[in-house]
Image: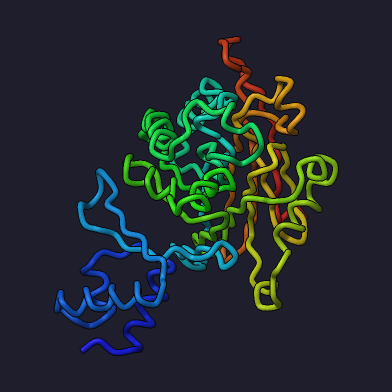
Length: 342
């Protein structure tokens, strides 16, 4: 028989992991399909936002996951602290803005090709995968298409051109505009359309791997302030609203979106990575709206042991390509940090 404690355990698990029916049966200690359905109905009666998806190319089983409110975060614990040296590598990008007339596809594809060439397997995206709808006055005039279905089709077609990359993303304010308008979840829809995309939730997510926590955060402060005071702006977004318990459990690394600016540095013990965007910042409209910034992404590599980052390296990859081909040269800026030398 399913108990109240079993249901509480299931809710906590669903906040952190995507589960199929068999996973839930184990947690609820039942093999009865009717009892499982009764629990799912109870969650809906409790107004819990339960997402259901069937990712293509993986298992055909339905996957269930509780969508956490943005301010509470989305937590994914992959593996804990160990005493072996581990090397972690990934790509870090943000603000692609598929469906925007100012999106630069050749810049995006060139950067992803560079990631593939240097052996990157996983790419984290800090929001604004699609351009959304009705974000600002005149937004409709700057869109190639307006519906969530068409915008996610564009994103799916582009991301599927890089099947060797596993994209993991949070929603930014542009993605979330569809959710505010009619409840649609662009990233959940995109996850069902292609094999190599994982939805991590809205606006914020924490991923812990070998005891190192990476926080994806889509910022909200003004871009003009961010350009002048980058570290202060990013940390202001991060520390806003934190309680004392949160302050004692800070992430090791933050990947931020929203600002369309380039920054990497360490502040308050947190590595901060802000990779720019894939929108054209050179035209008059984007300059006026503050959308200027580099196009490209960071290659991030670190060595960790015992829950500490001992060596940290970033390499910014920015193809010198806009809407027209201008050669294959790439601008690279490398930052290295070795904890043992500090």
